[in-house]
Every structure is written in structure tokens, then in C-alpha cells.
Amino acid sequence: MHSKIREYLKLETQPVATLWLDRAPEERLQFEKGRRGCILSLIAASAKGRVSALDHESFGCPGGGVGMGYGNQYENFPGGIDCFARFLSSGNKGYPKGEAVASALEGKAPQHFIHEYLNGEGYIKTPELVEDFMGRLGFMDIGKVTVFKPLDRVEPGEEPVVVTIFCNVDQLSALVVLCNSFQEGIDNVMSPFGAGCQSMGLLAYHQLAAERPKAIIGLFDITARNTLKGSLGENLLSFSVPYSLFVRMEEEADGSFLARKPWQKLTGSVSAG
Image 1 (cartoon, one colour):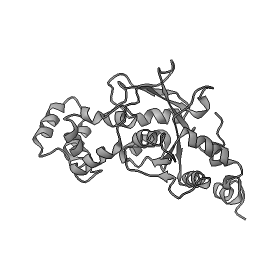
Image 2 (cartoon, helix red, strand yellow):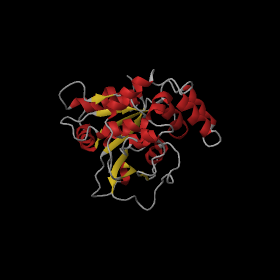
Image 3 (cartoon, one colour):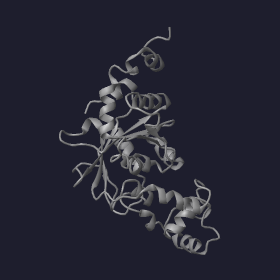
Image 4 (cartoon, one colour):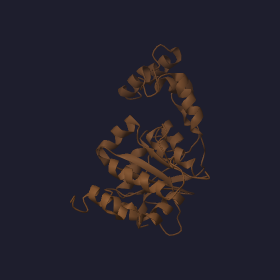
């Protein structure tokens, strides 16, 4: 699919289409069953032209399983949900169960993970607030293979569920304005808290059945940002939309502010004079 938005915004990478399929394409990037990894590395590869995939046995980490709609995988975090709640917040040090799990992980898990497991990531202040966060995510089980494709490699007859764009601040500004320009209201774009993959997956998936689907700004996840620095560069955020909304944005691009002087001036398409 050709994207007018990519042209107007001068995006350096392809919009990434997320598809739910019964089976993965033959040629794809995919983690081996049970291998630990970050799903964002797969999405980044698709933004640069590759096809990638995952399923209920190859989502890389518990947060990735949650983020891509494979149930409450926090239950399978080392030590379970209570230890995850401490890991994301203040740490498992001083918590007998968590300390026992950390000891059992010695020699099996990377030292940096064990350190964070004991001392916490500090992304949420307390375990109780982590439990509140998990309770609001709205776990789902899609029961399909997830496939990421560059938008221009989506085949006729395939319909993505979500499209994700990696963008800088000027490009994000344009996407927010465009998304609001043809709709009532001033809250057609959201920026909810969540892991990087969750903002491109689960949190966007919840918009599929909404009466007024909204776009999701993401990639506020500090750990995920470090993961993507080497592959996509710095100073990027993600903008994820249900496919139906993306199609409408594409239809509205011509004749919008994107074809007018203020935007062209900002992008250097016309002189500042």
C-alpha cells in the first residue's frame, strides 16, 4: 500500500502494518520458541523493510506477550505477578520469595536482569500501583499469529489491524493534527502509560471496537527506547492507529494542512520567506 502520509511527513522508515493471521509467512524474522528478546526489535526491522512474526510461544518476554495480546503473561514472570509488581517498582530485595527466585536465577539470567529484579526498575512507585496498572490493561488473547509488515508489502486481500508510524516531534505534531482535523472532539489521540510494545499492540487493539477509535502515542518506555536507539535512532515516538482510522487519515491528507505552506515551511519544502 502506497502511503501519502509517509510522503508528506518525509518519514525515514515505513509505517508498520500489524496483521493477525492463521500462520506466519515462510520468509520472516521470528524469535525461537522460548527465546528471550524484545518485540520492538522485530517491529523496527519491519519499519526498515523486513517481515517479522511472533505467536503465543515466541513473544520474547512476559511484557511482550501481554503487549501483543497473548493473555496475562505476567503470571509467567519469574516468581509470578507479585514479584513482577516489585520488579517494575521498588524491587524484590527484602521480599523472601523474590530473593529466593533471584538466587535461583544466578548463572541462568543476565546479571543486569538480576540486579533490576532485586532493586526494581522504578517505573512505578509501589507494587500496589503496579497491580492497579495491570488491572487497567485489559488483557486479551487474540488466538492468532502476529505478523509485522512494511506497509508497502501488505498484499491485496490482507487487512491490517493496526498501523504504527515511528516519527520525530514535528511529524508527530502533524499526525496529531491530521487525526483531529476531520473528527469532532479534542481527544482523538491518547498517550496512555504502558510498555513500548503495549502502546503499539494491546492499547491500540482496544480501539478496534470503539465507537470512536483513537490513535495511541507511545514509546515512552525507557527500556524500549534504549533497545531502539541502535536500530531506528534517537528522538522518536510511535503513533499507532486502527487500520480503519489510518485509511481515513490517508484519504484526508490531500487538501489538508499537509499541502500548505506552514507545514512545508517546517519541513523545508519551501523557503522560510
